[in-house]
Amino acid sequence: MWKRIAIALLSFFILLGIFGLKSPVAYACSCAEIPGMEAQLERKTAIFTGKVVGMRQEIEGVLTSSADPIIFKFEVQEVWKGDLSKHTNVYSAVSSDSCGYTFDAKKEYLVFAEGEPDRLITGLCEGNKRLEFAQEELIALGTGYDPTPPTASNKLPLTLPFTDNDSEKGYASIVIVAIISITMIFLLGIFLTKRRRG
Image (cartoon, rainbow, N blue to C red):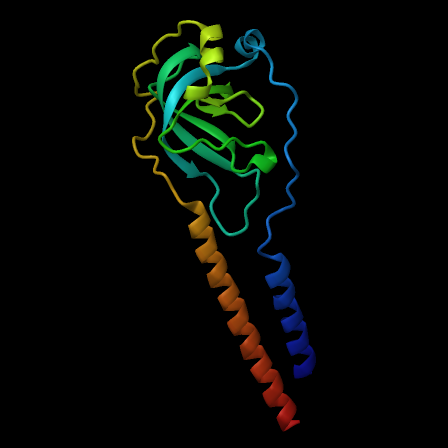
């Protein structure tokens, strides 16, 4: 009886250790040709330049997906489309495997986004560029306008910290693997003890 229970539990924890910590299968992102500026102005909800002043992964934990959202907080500098506050959040998938765009901390970008003003979404295929490499696009856009000052309805939290999600997830993974290993050793000890007595 104990032998069967021990084998079943050991098998369960081994399978959990092998498969439980893996993210869902991700497929490489494939982008069509990025549309011209006229089409961008027509299709996008927001077009602006800004500096990345914060980022945070919206879904945190050990079991994650490449499609999980990450929030980037921008200090908006110039706007060509959209009613944007001086501080604006933009969402993207956390990984380029799911067509997410990774903005570097404290760098300036030309950003193309879609969606509602309180949840703008962008990605790898939208035409985003570091500002120093976007001179051609800036010339095509011409002169923009200033973002609106924050109000009670559009004011975002001033603290959206930069986070090192990889280290947090790595630490959590180590803890879970350690718990599984200790449990397996404990069950193996019970099994061997019962076997000797039998």
